[in-house]
Length: 138
Image (cartoon, rainbow, N blue to C red):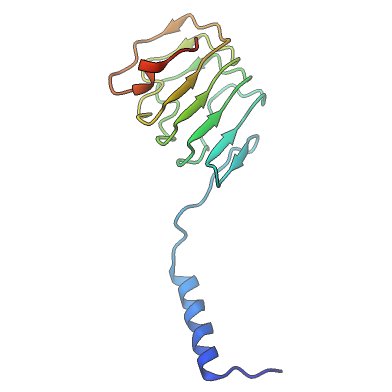
């Protein structure tokens, strides 16, 4: 059995202490039925028969793809848990109503796709949501 020399033992102890003392900075969350890429910070929940926006999407997600689900309504605060979103795909989700405050807190959003839905009600979007100035798909 090899013997550790004093300098090696010191390094092993320091490394052990370092690993014990450093808290985990971020624990990734991914909805069970979705595919998440922790490097690109994307979440894809395409065609998963979802009826609600999943609340377990990681906070640091920048691209969320919910295409081809059965959401029907986007409620107020639906994306409050994902403030870093820049891209949001909601096409073909049978959306009929987008409630007031649905996109509140998404100040970084630059792309929103609501194509191929049956939107009957689209409440006025609050000031400070830059995406509405470049919303092309309804």
